[in-house]
Amino acid sequence: MDVVLFGPPGAGKGTQSKFLMTRLGVPQISTGDMMRAERKSGSELGQRFDSFMSKGLLVPDELVLELLAKRLDDADAAGGAIFDGFPRTVPQAIALDAILAKRGRKIDRVLALEVPESVIVDRISGRRTCQDCGQAYHVRYNPPPSTGRCTQCDSDRIVQRSDDKEETVRTRNGAYLKDTLPILDHYRANAGVVVSLDGTGAVEEVTKRLENALEGRTQ
Ligand code: AP5
Figure 1: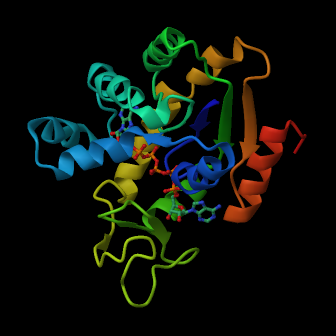
Figure 2 (figure 1 turned 90 degrees about the horizontal axis):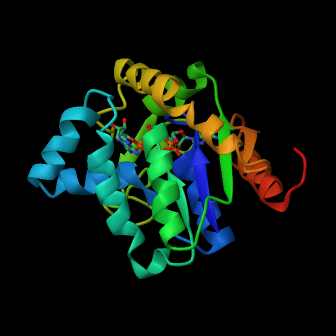
């Protein structure tokens, strides 16, 4: 099954992807995580990503699509994927349709998390992220352990992401409203593919709504 987990920055896509991976048995493909890994490697490509990401701007489509097409060739993505933070523009959505069609696949479901900007800013400004494995915490809602070590990989490098400052978050949300939200109309051309969900409330409540959406139950 191929699922787009859709929503503004800080909607909880990364958090809820963990549940979806277990539920569907397919990998999470996060273009943001892939770009951060490339940036961490110190490569020239990583520096190009950083010049956009650090300002809260979208990385140009051609750079993203190259990264994505390569990832879909990996064996673990042969049976489907959860796309987290991708596609981000209508041209990316059209390109993804073509990439999947070549593999005899299509987007089966777009799960769209709806979260107002005030909640986004609160969630992102309180987020702390493990630099080694990407695990997200929140200073109030899901605090990092008092030992300072990541629960997933034991790293002691739990930091604030450089693009998680309030001003950059507002720029990221602006890019979402202008370039990303119109993608929903692209997918709405196929009836029943897009399911919109309330992304506010506790993590477990949102997970329950996603579970219901996958089962075809009304919210
Ligand atoms: P990316 O890494 O994709 O970031 P994003 O979409 O902005 O989303 P986030 O990772 O910020 O949030 P999330 O929805 O995963 O929320 P999370 O679960 O962490 O992109 C970063 C940048 O890379 C972009 O700005 C762009 O430059 C570039 N980029 C990436 N992909 C691109 C593409 N395809 N094209 C072009 N450019 C691209 O949750 C947030 C916080 O809230 C956490 O602290 C979490 O613990 C907490 N939280 C989650 N759910 C709840 C809840 N229910 N209640 C309370 N707290 C919660």
